[in-house]
Length: 489
Image (tube, rainbow, N blue to C red; front, side, top):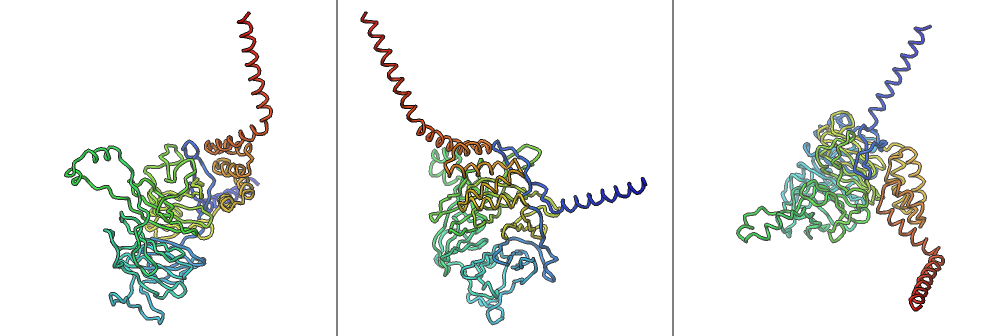
């Protein structure tokens, strides 16, 4: 009998161990957030590992790395810079096509009209899909050109080389590309200090767009003003930090990132004038990890963003190459979640290069690991993302309902309290808004709600306030009257 009980206990323990192993393989180990005081706090996982795209999906095609990813419709486009290939997968993560040598509409190898040579990709670094025109834009970096393919059959449509009217010192080596609705082409050139290159749809140079401002060193500025012209000539020039990646939203705003430590900002939302209008209404600026000394968050160096991925409801993800982490922000610039870490285990990031949304799933590529990880939202993550979407679309009651459910799962979700408070603030329910802003430690919005609450209280009690003021005036006047009357006597 005892032997039977021991056997049952052993079987039960083994099942639990197997369940824990499976859970560990599918759950993102490092996930956290920051509170109002800048300390790392434990967070419920937003995402869990769902699938992996690696060499097993490539068949006979050699895979040497994954350097850029974008998802449009039912296709996943991944650049392999080392092998000079654009690999295309379906949403079942099966390889559809692998393009290195480009063909024309007749099925023959296409010829570049300028060089009279075969159109073959050479160390491409970026890809962008223009849904409106059904075109694939490839930054053919090694050949210093842009190759544009037909999205349906992958045949050559045209090639854009360096414009004859291009000015400045920036070399024309396209690394990342974005195209807006009126077919303006925006190009990132690595180490280009003059800004983003803007071209017309025909490939004519228009301007440099959105110069990245460097940090101001007051001492250096002082000595430059004091120096003579000869001394200034010998001083090292201060160049604008370069961008490293680019994305465009549905409204035509350009998002860009940089990991240059001399840059004033790390993430940009550029309006048509090239001004940074990124919203940063969270407790902390959009700069990734804080230098936190708690055991939960081990941050040896500042975050270095290499890519940004946008949703159609304002929420965006940033990829930190330095620490192997993904940061999720909402449209207001409030940090929703951080997950991931450096490592060689499955699901960990060693040399992350790019990320893209596939619905609510996130695809993150890793050059060193030669794979792409697909993360899907957990129940908590799904609630938070749907709430962010509802709030962005003005559905405040729906957002509040979803966030209250999320809070029941994770009471540390400070951003949720702030968002709920904003919903009540919009409805001029200032008392309730103040309650939630206090829970979320949001002093700025608490002050706004308090000002509204105070104004309404004054309006509702104005009669009593006015009567009290009259009584005070009468009391003072009567007191003065009695004083002077007494003095006369």
